[in-house]
Every structure is written in structure tokens, then in C-alpha cells.
Length: 179
Image 1: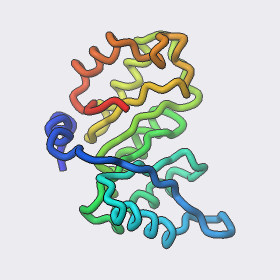
Image 2: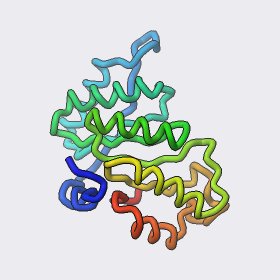
Image 3: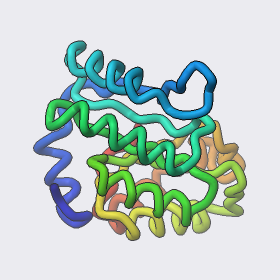
Image 4: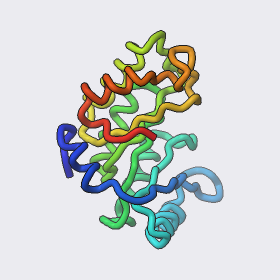
């Protein structure tokens, strides 16, 4: 519904309320995502009055299974629920590829995570990864400074110093929130 340069205006107009989290469920033999279960979970999100939901990707799904999960969620939700893509894949390239695929399926916002193999040496590496991801997609992005990735060696605030956050906000127009 917008491009990266319009992301902050979109966020100001549309981000209000509480977003929950949905994990993809699987069939009882664990061989494939459970479409009926996923659709049920999305209906419960809507019935519970959530504004949006983060469709988590840290569940051992393949990238294609994750994209299918997002597509089913959008089909079920229609325009009644905002879908947040969870950019938590194995590389910058994969994160970009899957974000673009989920945007095509109806994801509207991204929670940016970092691959377990990403080891920034300094703030410049962290800035570069974040900026490269954001520049490559046309969705609003929420950054997520959290100790999970071990970036405290760069700055005690989960790697994101106030100066780094300020620089990202100045230079990257589709960063719209910090979780």
C-alpha cells in the first residue's frame, strides 16, 4: 500500500493498537504447515481485537513454507489484521528475498532480526546490514535492539548506541519503529 519513502506516513496513519504473535502450526506428522490450524489462529487474532500479528519465522520452516504461512494468513485475515513479516532468516540475501516474497503475499511491516552467523565488528557493520536490508525492500521496518544477537560488545544497548539509532533514522526512511 506504500513504498519505502512513504513508510513513516503509512506508520503514523496505520500503526495503532497491539500486535500479537502467531507461530505456524504443522500437521500431526510434522511434514507440512497446517493450513486449517494457521487460519484458525488468524481468526482468533481478529476475534481478540489485535491490530496486527507478527508471523514468526524462527520455527524451522523452510523459506517457502514461511511464505505459504504468510499467504494463508493474508487470505484468512483480509484487511482485518496487519501482518508483520519476521526477517529472521540465514543471511542478508535470504532476508531480502523472503521479505519481498511475503510483501507480495500481503505482509505490510517487517520486524528485522539478524542471522545467527552475522558478527558485526563495529557499529558500521551493524549500520551497513540494517541499511542494506531496508534499502532493498518497500516495507516499513521495525528495528529490534535485543541482546539475543550478542551485539553488546559493540555497545551495551544491544549494540545500538543512541548515535547509531539516530543515524539510521536520519538515513533510512522506512525505519518506522523500535521494538
